[in-house]
Image (cartoon, rainbow, N blue to C red; front, side):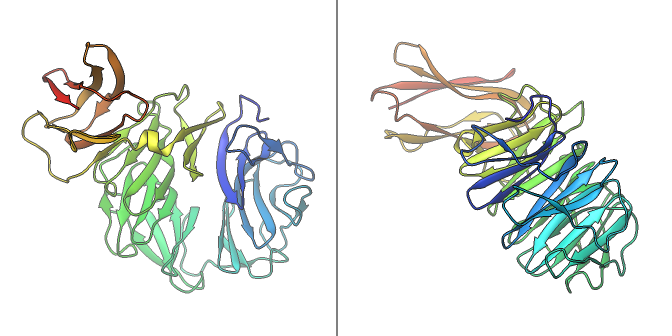
Length: 379
């Protein structure tokens, strides 16, 4: 239902619906992206949907490049019809971000900083005290703080629902495109990925210095980032809170990523001009990092448990960045499956194999890099 040349600017989840805002309109799916339904009645036909949110039963979308009716629209009937809801918002040709926090909704646009509504979009009031520069994105948190990311190397923090803001300087500087918060950590992406665990008092660089407009968290330790830099396009994941990263581009024909979301055990990626992709979380998380230390030598360890039924873990060490292939063979030497086939940073890794689809017996697993090859047996 989504034209194949669409750029996917954002995702949003409400009840059993996955919404996506694109350069060709707004769509939703109730079957995990197998089919998509357009809901654009009342929206300008020449507008890009940059952001979607909701409060109670009301949906909101932010529009870009709509020459006749820029700004913000709302729907009270699940998107079947839309009306303009710009009362109090300065004119803008691009709405960057909408965020619903508690009973308030916040909006950021290209010609203004932060505005909010406390009455379901009937009117909007400025929430800019202390803000400076161009605000690109917003995020709320479970600790009651509100965060605003700017096109400079600043994140602004508010502890009073946007009444006042305090400036936080990111170590090393970075253009802030996206913010993501889990229960302990705020992550930002722009020209690099950084994080803070104390509301911006200190920032830590996460060793992923690629241009990105999408970063999300999934639980305590998993962080997903979509890069849209020509030399490093793709989907990157960390399973240890941004210390180490793994590139997982398998199946992405167009790895320039604009948006990400986790929904019903899938990770969805919105690309530039190539539509929506999805992948099972269990599929991308079959490899993870498990220590912060860099090993001094290559190593392949005995799987555990062994014997096993049906799952086992295979651990290996990389003293430096390497292209890695980890393959499972049956007792006759026939290739059964490839668990890893990608470039990995230096570190210690754990790959999972679920053999529930294979008969009991003896198998072999083989780790190959340019400088190291080793094979071990498992049962």
